Length: 170
Image (cartoon, rainbow, N blue to C red; front, side, top):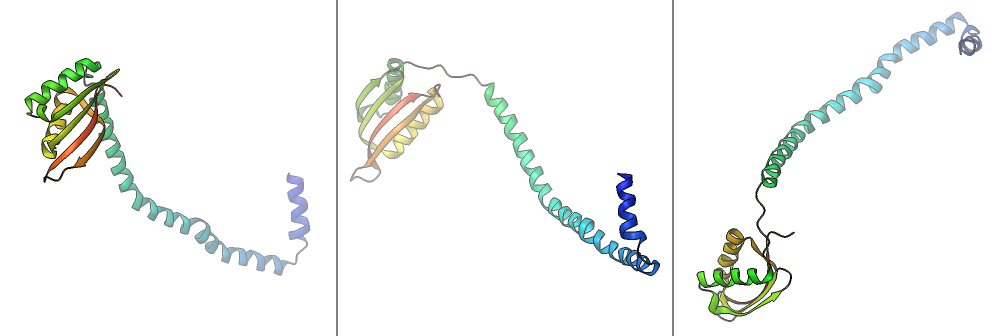
């Protein structure tokens, strides 16, 4: 490698006149600040500005992720509700419907193994339906898997077909 460098130097530098070498040296010295500016300082300055703008957002995202990790850890340690079979689920739904005075609107309550119940409410207040479903979810971990809602001519009344399942299953 040293021999190649010496051959290159002899061919391109040593054969030049002293004035020419001095002019090239001065030109290189004059251009070096420009080269340093455009190749080093300016890209670093632009990158620094971008980092100053993005770091606070990234810190906020990291804090949010830490909060979510704490919440996920807390949820993971919660007790899992027992999975009800279809008949126990049907009984729980009927008892809840009686407590919420919605049993009269239930026209059908069909068991769908392994742990689902298909219900039909012919005419029920939509608000009463929502309150009942919220109660089922909160108290007994029974959730709506699918539903069909048709409005009735009376204001606030609806015909509802729904499949309810035990919330302990995923």
